[in-house]
Image (tube, rainbow, N blue to C red; front, side):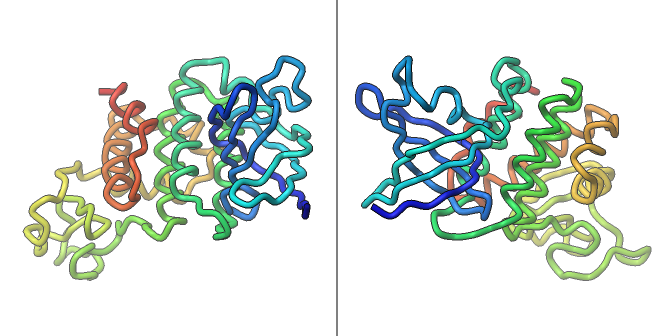
Length: 253
């Protein structure tokens, strides 16, 4: 049976039979891997906590017909604090759920893995009140990597840059993927009403490092608005329900 090695971030685990697990992983190249960890739920399992969600692990896997098989696992980063604190767990769960929904088997996206791991690294030590901003920054960066970078400097309908003559409206088009200008404000009747500061907030989150986001001290109201908009934006373009994100944003309202 052919084997291969991979460094991967554990996203989700599902029970299989009496003692096995199916683990969903994001490999370092951005491909999703689904594999069976035999006996992983036994007390004396050699895998232990190495395949817990949010952990980064070096793996040896054997190729199978439908699911690969984990044969060796060595922990690189456990991110244990993300599993023992409720606020950190709920924030990290959004990261794992998003990566689970957008990653695809045998389809590389090399930026996803470092984005996910860096976000979890920062979440592990960040102040609790900084977690919502980190979730918002992760989502807007993740959507941009997925091909849906929000249009903030030009109209999402006509494409004209904002200027004194063509100002930005207070409408965000989910379909168009950004802010509408005053002239195109009626182009999308379903566009969300937003504040004049939303574009600035999303732009800051897009261009800032995660460590900088954690220390930026963004006002809670601005972060909440960004999360609500990005949640709707992701929900519109990602063809899968992200329950962790829905619960996280719902818990803030």
